[in-house]
Image (tube, one colour):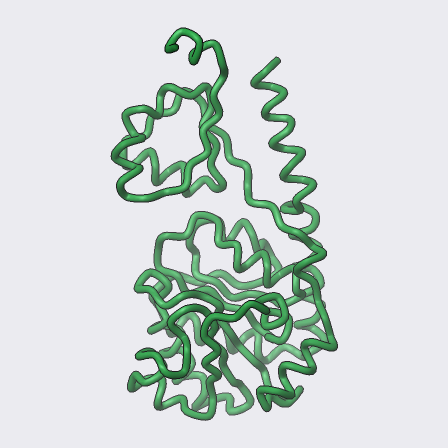
Length: 265
């Protein structure tokens, strides 16, 4: 069995769990090639003992048909939420977890609200339901009337398209944050912390800030919010083009196919 098994070339894709890391690290020299979806993912696995004989980064791929701007849905949702078109809507779609750092989002929201009253906020994802603890925190209560609590939603692509600025505030634990690419495909410019491949994803179509610094987040939001609606739309259009050019499903599938051909050649 073993001799038959090792007649084949192995390519190893990894999704991280604490248990699997311990199990797989000693086995990491066995595959002919280890694939990861970002440089930061490779670096992290090296730090916990992975020693692949060869490695390569292939990013995640995205469908531009599923995630795309939809002006009708944008207008419908904003009307449903009572958000006027001249209001700048800043949102984050992320489950509530320590690594996602919702505290920094709320801190920055409190600060910028005092200076720019035409801004409203939105949080979606598991744990952001209006009857869950985060929505009843002291910080959240201070933002009453300024923030929408949506909880888990199936229409994420429509919500992303209804935002004026999409945000990610994660402190750690992100390899390739899909939510940024998805928002960009919906034509929404992003402000993100410098985690995982975030900076490589957004390029020059958004703003990257240090994690855990609400003052920097507030400043970046202010920069984006002060742009004209047309300028933000132009940024969003550039963001969509960037994802379609570099991270489309067709492009990523081509990279995998080329890699497999090289391995079999």
